[in-house]
Length: 151
Image (cartoon, rainbow, N blue to C red; front, side):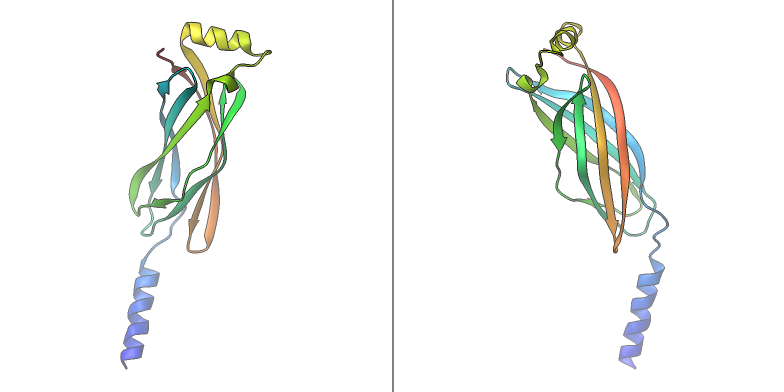
């Protein structure tokens, strides 16, 4: 009888938790330059999500690339991020870019123009993967912004 009760309680808990849909990707926020020095430029962004489900899951970046002035300069690799249930949440995306990777013979005019105007065109492109209870899906990210650089 105890075993039957345990099975019933387990079923109620398992089936009572709803997995309606994957969390909704709301966009990238707060894309900004965090630090600039002679060797690196550090960029940060927040990927904003909303999870309507009773259960969480795991998010991880996969092949998320950063472009500055149309040139690929970095890949973002993050550890797995635990998704909270029934909540809005952000995933920080921080990348450090070597300033010498921005210098290109064909792109030098563009870089100098950006430094003079103190603006960079930054683009995030790739995937963030979501996993929960054996279910997996991907969010395609492709967002571009013009950001100010304070030297």
